[in-house]
Image (tube, rainbow, N blue to C red; front, side):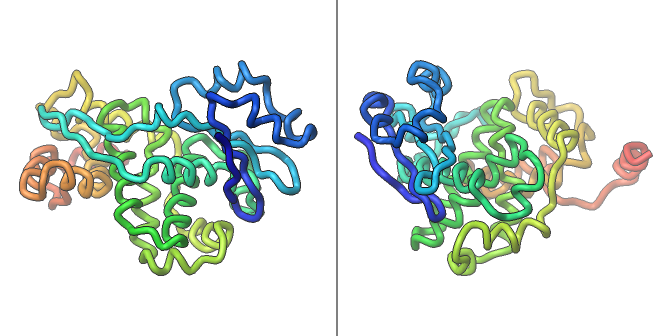
Length: 282
Protein backbone atom coordinates (compact mmCIF):
# COMPACT_ATOMS: atom_id res chain seq x y z
CA UNK A 1 0.00 0.00 0.00
CA UNK A 2 1.06 3.59 -0.59
CA UNK A 3 -0.55 6.97 -0.64
CA UNK A 4 -0.05 10.70 -0.77
CA UNK A 5 -0.38 13.02 2.21
CA UNK A 6 0.23 16.73 2.35
CA UNK A 7 3.10 18.57 4.04
CA UNK A 8 2.77 22.37 3.84
CA UNK A 9 2.12 22.96 0.13
CA UNK A 10 3.69 19.76 -1.13
CA UNK A 11 2.84 16.08 -1.08
CA UNK A 12 4.62 13.25 0.68
CA UNK A 13 4.61 9.70 -0.61
CA UNK A 14 3.84 7.10 2.07
CA UNK A 15 5.48 3.73 1.44
CA UNK A 16 4.94 0.59 3.48
CA UNK A 17 8.21 -1.31 3.90
CA UNK A 18 6.58 -4.52 2.67
CA UNK A 19 5.97 -2.96 -0.77
CA UNK A 20 8.82 -0.47 -0.81
CA UNK A 21 10.17 -1.14 -4.31
CA UNK A 22 6.75 -0.89 -5.93
CA UNK A 23 5.96 2.27 -4.02
CA UNK A 24 9.21 4.08 -4.78
CA UNK A 25 8.73 3.31 -8.48
CA UNK A 26 5.96 5.93 -8.43
CA UNK A 27 8.52 8.68 -7.87
CA UNK A 28 9.91 10.71 -10.77
CA UNK A 29 13.44 9.59 -11.57
CA UNK A 30 14.92 12.90 -10.37
CA UNK A 31 13.30 12.31 -6.96
CA UNK A 32 14.17 8.61 -6.72
CA UNK A 33 17.84 9.34 -7.35
CA UNK A 34 17.97 11.42 -4.18
CA UNK A 35 17.23 8.39 -2.02
CA UNK A 36 19.56 5.51 -1.06
CA UNK A 37 18.93 2.03 -2.45
CA UNK A 38 16.14 -0.04 -0.93
CA UNK A 39 18.41 -2.19 1.22
CA UNK A 40 20.00 0.91 2.78
CA UNK A 41 16.56 2.42 3.43
CA UNK A 42 15.48 -0.78 5.19
CA UNK A 43 18.64 -0.70 7.31
CA UNK A 44 18.10 2.93 8.23
CA UNK A 45 14.51 2.16 9.13
CA UNK A 46 15.52 -0.59 11.57
CA UNK A 47 12.78 -1.29 14.11
CA UNK A 48 11.14 2.11 13.80
CA UNK A 49 7.50 2.51 12.98
CA UNK A 50 8.13 5.33 10.52
CA UNK A 51 10.91 7.39 8.99
CA UNK A 52 10.82 10.50 6.80
CA UNK A 53 13.25 11.22 3.99
CA UNK A 54 13.06 14.70 2.41
CA UNK A 55 13.32 15.21 -1.34
CA UNK A 56 14.06 18.39 -3.26
CA UNK A 57 11.23 18.50 -5.77
CA UNK A 58 8.61 21.06 -6.73
CA UNK A 59 5.68 18.77 -5.95
CA UNK A 60 7.07 16.16 -3.54
CA UNK A 61 8.24 17.07 -0.03
CA UNK A 62 9.61 13.61 0.63
CA UNK A 63 8.91 9.96 1.36
CA UNK A 64 7.61 8.49 4.60
CA UNK A 65 8.54 4.86 5.16
CA UNK A 66 6.01 3.04 7.30
CA UNK A 67 5.99 -0.23 9.24
CA UNK A 68 2.66 -0.35 11.05
CA UNK A 69 3.67 -3.46 13.01
CA UNK A 70 6.35 -1.42 14.79
CA UNK A 71 4.08 1.44 15.86
CA UNK A 72 3.37 0.83 19.58
CA UNK A 73 -0.21 0.62 20.84
CA UNK A 74 0.81 1.38 24.42
CA UNK A 75 3.66 3.02 26.32
CA UNK A 76 4.85 1.82 29.72
CA UNK A 77 7.55 2.48 32.31
CA UNK A 78 8.57 1.63 35.85
CA UNK A 79 7.62 4.39 38.27
CA UNK A 80 7.96 4.23 42.04
CA UNK A 81 8.38 0.46 41.95
CA UNK A 82 5.37 -0.23 39.76
CA UNK A 83 4.90 -0.59 36.01
CA UNK A 84 2.40 1.89 34.58
CA UNK A 85 1.01 1.72 31.06
CA UNK A 86 -0.68 4.28 28.81
CA UNK A 87 -2.88 3.11 25.93
CA UNK A 88 -2.16 4.99 22.69
CA UNK A 89 -4.93 5.97 20.28
CA UNK A 90 -4.91 7.06 16.62
CA UNK A 91 -1.30 5.88 16.47
CA UNK A 92 -1.01 5.68 12.68
CA UNK A 93 -2.38 9.18 12.15
CA UNK A 94 -0.21 10.57 14.95
CA UNK A 95 2.89 8.91 13.51
CA UNK A 96 2.25 10.25 10.01
CA UNK A 97 1.66 13.77 11.30
CA UNK A 98 4.92 13.71 13.25
CA UNK A 99 6.85 12.50 10.20
CA UNK A 100 5.18 15.17 8.06
CA UNK A 101 6.52 17.58 10.64
CA UNK A 102 10.07 16.52 9.83
CA UNK A 103 9.42 17.19 6.15
CA UNK A 104 7.80 20.55 6.93
CA UNK A 105 10.85 21.56 8.95
CA UNK A 106 13.18 20.67 6.09
CA UNK A 107 11.12 22.65 3.56
CA UNK A 108 10.39 25.55 5.91
CA UNK A 109 10.95 29.13 4.78
CA UNK A 110 11.07 30.48 8.33
CA UNK A 111 14.37 32.21 9.03
CA UNK A 112 14.40 30.61 12.48
CA UNK A 113 14.68 27.16 10.92
CA UNK A 114 17.01 27.97 8.03
CA UNK A 115 19.74 30.09 9.63
CA UNK A 116 21.72 27.18 11.05
CA UNK A 117 21.70 23.40 11.14
CA UNK A 118 19.16 22.01 13.61
CA UNK A 119 20.12 19.44 16.23
CA UNK A 120 18.28 16.13 16.53
CA UNK A 121 16.60 17.44 19.68
CA UNK A 122 15.37 20.55 17.84
CA UNK A 123 14.12 18.50 14.91
CA UNK A 124 12.10 16.26 17.22
CA UNK A 125 10.40 18.97 19.25
CA UNK A 126 9.68 20.97 16.12
CA UNK A 127 8.10 17.87 14.55
CA UNK A 128 5.93 17.55 17.65
CA UNK A 129 5.01 21.24 17.32
CA UNK A 130 3.86 20.43 13.79
CA UNK A 131 1.92 17.46 15.14
CA UNK A 132 0.13 19.66 17.69
CA UNK A 133 -0.61 22.39 15.15
CA UNK A 134 -1.91 19.93 12.54
CA UNK A 135 -4.13 18.17 15.10
CA UNK A 136 -5.61 21.50 16.19
CA UNK A 137 -6.01 22.60 12.56
CA UNK A 138 -7.86 19.37 11.74
CA UNK A 139 -10.25 19.82 14.67
CA UNK A 140 -8.86 16.83 16.54
CA UNK A 141 -9.24 16.75 20.35
CA UNK A 142 -6.50 18.16 22.57
CA UNK A 143 -6.39 14.82 24.37
CA UNK A 144 -4.31 13.49 21.46
CA UNK A 145 -1.76 16.24 22.04
CA UNK A 146 -1.57 15.30 25.71
CA UNK A 147 -1.13 11.68 24.68
CA UNK A 148 2.02 12.66 22.77
CA UNK A 149 3.17 14.75 25.74
CA UNK A 150 2.75 11.79 28.08
CA UNK A 151 4.41 9.44 25.61
CA UNK A 152 7.51 11.64 25.48
CA UNK A 153 7.75 11.66 29.27
CA UNK A 154 7.17 7.92 29.60
CA UNK A 155 9.89 7.40 27.03
CA UNK A 156 12.51 8.95 29.31
CA UNK A 157 11.07 7.21 32.37
CA UNK A 158 11.77 3.97 30.56
CA UNK A 159 15.21 4.89 29.20
CA UNK A 160 17.39 8.00 29.26
CA UNK A 161 18.36 7.05 25.70
CA UNK A 162 15.07 8.67 24.65
CA UNK A 163 16.37 12.15 25.58
CA UNK A 164 16.73 13.18 21.93
CA UNK A 165 12.94 12.80 21.59
CA UNK A 166 12.07 14.43 24.94
CA UNK A 167 10.11 17.35 23.50
CA UNK A 168 8.21 17.96 26.74
CA UNK A 169 10.15 21.09 27.84
CA UNK A 170 9.19 22.75 24.57
CA UNK A 171 5.65 21.36 24.36
CA UNK A 172 5.01 22.72 27.85
CA UNK A 173 5.79 26.20 26.57
CA UNK A 174 3.56 25.76 23.53
CA UNK A 175 0.59 24.59 25.63
CA UNK A 176 1.10 27.42 28.11
CA UNK A 177 1.28 30.04 25.34
CA UNK A 178 -1.66 29.02 23.15
CA UNK A 179 -5.09 27.58 23.65
CA UNK A 180 -6.06 24.69 21.39
CA UNK A 181 -8.37 27.05 19.51
CA UNK A 182 -5.64 29.66 19.07
CA UNK A 183 -3.22 27.06 17.73
CA UNK A 184 -5.72 26.15 15.02
CA UNK A 185 -5.85 29.76 13.81
CA UNK A 186 -2.35 29.69 12.33
CA UNK A 187 -2.68 29.36 8.57
CA UNK A 188 0.48 27.30 8.19
CA UNK A 189 3.34 25.88 10.24
CA UNK A 190 5.79 28.64 9.34
CA UNK A 191 3.37 31.24 10.68
CA UNK A 192 3.35 29.46 14.03
CA UNK A 193 7.14 29.19 14.10
CA UNK A 194 7.64 32.84 13.15
CA UNK A 195 5.49 33.94 16.07
CA UNK A 196 6.43 31.50 18.83
CA UNK A 197 10.08 30.65 18.17
CA UNK A 198 11.62 33.95 19.37
CA UNK A 199 9.81 33.64 22.71
CA UNK A 200 10.75 30.04 23.46
CA UNK A 201 13.26 29.17 26.14
CA UNK A 202 15.87 27.05 24.42
CA UNK A 203 17.92 24.33 26.12
CA UNK A 204 21.58 23.80 25.30
CA UNK A 205 23.32 20.45 25.46
CA UNK A 206 24.78 21.07 28.92
CA UNK A 207 21.29 21.71 30.31
CA UNK A 208 19.91 18.62 28.60
CA UNK A 209 22.79 16.59 30.02
CA UNK A 210 21.85 17.77 33.52
CA UNK A 211 18.26 16.71 32.96
CA UNK A 212 19.45 13.36 31.64
CA UNK A 213 21.55 12.87 34.77
CA UNK A 214 18.59 13.71 36.99
CA UNK A 215 16.32 11.38 35.01
CA UNK A 216 18.84 8.57 35.40
CA UNK A 217 18.88 9.22 39.14
CA UNK A 218 15.08 9.25 39.42
CA UNK A 219 14.16 6.39 37.10
CA UNK A 220 17.32 4.39 36.37
CA UNK A 221 18.04 0.95 37.77
CA UNK A 222 20.74 2.44 40.01
CA UNK A 223 18.52 5.20 41.39
CA UNK A 224 19.26 6.33 44.93
CA UNK A 225 16.83 8.08 47.23
CA UNK A 226 19.32 9.42 49.73
CA UNK A 227 20.60 12.34 47.68
CA UNK A 228 17.78 14.92 47.85
CA UNK A 229 20.10 17.74 46.75
CA UNK A 230 21.30 15.97 43.60
CA UNK A 231 20.54 18.34 40.68
CA UNK A 232 18.18 20.17 43.02
CA UNK A 233 18.25 23.26 40.81
CA UNK A 234 16.65 21.20 38.02
CA UNK A 235 14.08 19.38 40.15
CA UNK A 236 11.26 21.98 40.34
CA UNK A 237 11.25 22.51 36.57
CA UNK A 238 11.50 18.78 35.95
CA UNK A 239 8.51 18.37 38.27
CA UNK A 240 6.56 20.89 36.20
CA UNK A 241 7.36 18.98 33.01
CA UNK A 242 6.42 15.52 34.25
CA UNK A 243 3.61 16.34 36.70
CA UNK A 244 0.76 15.94 34.15
CA UNK A 245 2.11 12.54 33.11
CA UNK A 246 2.72 11.29 36.64
CA UNK A 247 -0.82 12.36 37.55
CA UNK A 248 -2.18 10.59 34.47
CA UNK A 249 -0.42 7.36 35.47
CA UNK A 250 -0.62 7.38 39.27
CA UNK A 251 -3.61 9.56 40.04
CA UNK A 252 -3.34 13.04 41.55
CA UNK A 253 -2.99 12.02 45.20
CA UNK A 254 -0.20 9.49 44.74
CA UNK A 255 1.47 11.70 42.16
CA UNK A 256 1.55 14.65 44.57
CA UNK A 257 3.07 12.49 47.30
CA UNK A 258 5.72 11.12 44.96
CA UNK A 259 6.62 14.54 43.56
CA UNK A 260 7.04 15.93 47.08
CA UNK A 261 9.08 12.90 48.13
CA UNK A 262 11.43 13.38 45.17
CA UNK A 263 11.57 17.16 45.73
CA UNK A 264 10.14 17.72 42.27
CA UNK A 265 7.41 20.05 43.49
CA UNK A 266 7.94 23.77 43.96
CA UNK A 267 8.83 24.59 47.53
CA UNK A 268 10.55 27.30 49.54
CA UNK A 269 14.28 26.71 49.75
CA UNK A 270 15.63 25.85 53.18
CA UNK A 271 18.85 27.48 54.37
CA UNK A 272 20.67 24.26 53.45
CA UNK A 273 19.20 24.35 49.95
CA UNK A 274 20.17 28.01 49.60
CA UNK A 275 23.79 27.27 50.52
CA UNK A 276 23.88 24.48 47.91
CA UNK A 277 22.43 26.84 45.31
CA UNK A 278 25.00 29.52 46.11
CA UNK A 279 27.76 26.97 45.64
CA UNK A 280 26.28 25.88 42.31
CA UNK A 281 26.20 29.43 40.94
CA UNK A 282 29.81 30.21 41.87
